Length: 528
Image (cartoon, rainbow, N blue to C red):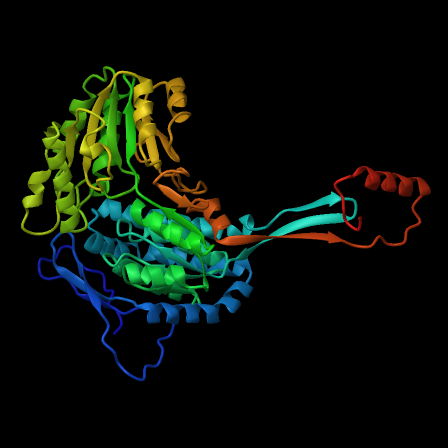
């Protein structure tokens, strides 16, 4: 049965439309004829805001992964044989379809992901920004050409890897898949996407738009499922590269599994992002930014603030942060705080807040009351004044609208705390002094840094990714922009020498050429 993807209405009060999704190949591959029916396990899709069942998604097994790979293998020769310009032309059409269907996609993200409307718009728009970057790849893909010795040239080309898979989380149903899929496709690869089983509806609809844009059958496919599905994708010998975004624990497992079979992998893990506020910061601007950073998207983003370090006397900054956080209300309209993804997430966040209180933290703003709502999975903005770096909320990623505040005496103490974290995703300093900002940005141990920007997401053409050697990043390259173009291609280097034509050039010129060849001791072409 094919999915119904009619946009839901958030003004309605009755039960929302129920969607039903089958396994992979839906939207870009014609279904296979089946000689017999078999029972397929499925998972319910719940609306975080209400807890209601809004869909059922069939869970893909190894057989479905194999079918998707076979379809991709059949489609690959034709797709990779197109010029990069021809593939980018499909992305141009797709980009416009994303704009045209913005409202429909926003409704789906709000329904299955729980974001407020403004956040859902940003989810689609930021993802589409990467599609726009992919449209520029014909100008970025050409390799280098250089005469490296007399009569010898070297040039390189970028070739697609083949079949690749992208495994993405629930928190940005559109943006995170768009970090990789448009670039991988424009580079000439076939893509098998494994979205979170908690939010399958958005990418199911987007796959229809890719088909409408002109993507051939088998070039982009979706499989749904959990650990067995991921393992089948990672282990398949025809899948040449894997990208993953999710928790650090799973990112490390995926990376090690790929490394064991010499497979290219980029696995982005969790975060524990530190904000450092100096006495010379603009208190009002910083308070707004801090609250938006830790409470926006209900704290469910790897770029969310998690720790606020107040260096010395920062005046009434903390009071401003608490006042703004306490004024936020639950809901899904602009400026409101939406639900977390499910009850398990809610209960974990509430439990960690309780552990912090038991360790001596003072609750300045308490969002646990929201968790008592009868419908949905809610946690309100919470501000904790902790006593030490050993507080339970200072160590782990909460993935909720909670910030731990700690006062420190010096810049060096703040840097030591940030550098001691096992994570290395993002950090930010709030200051009005450029020299102060440079001191911190040159010492932070994180891959993405902000100055007065609490969610320092690099926008195209800059690539997204944490720091190597930390729990935030395992594997190769970055996940957007030029880093993704490098990841999804392989460079072939060609060295060429042609025989010299007969020439009536003066003897002096021939002697000069001979002397040049003799002086180039690195030139071993035709020499022993």
